[in-house]
Length: 86
Image (cartoon, rainbow, N blue to C red; front, top):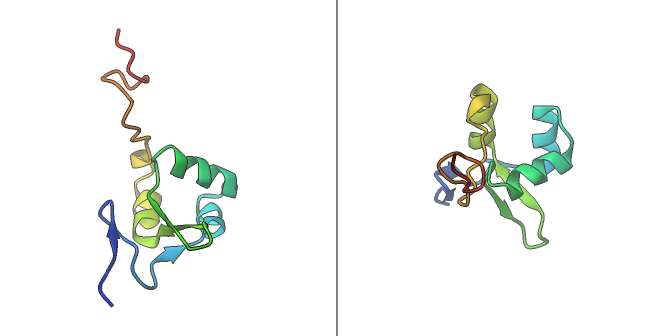
């Protein structure tokens, strides 16, 4: 089976993590992980039942580079404040 890549991250077999596993790795609650996904900070795929799954490759990257876990919302303007400029 070929690797499945989403937003550049490997979501193939053996690479999927549950929200609870990601929460344990970052020592936060599952609701925080869901919020990060909603904000575009983490890429995810959903199972047929609607449960999020995260790429082990992506999570390990962010564990090693915590500053790169920044929002990537498309509506952020040049100042990074939702389109507001100074």
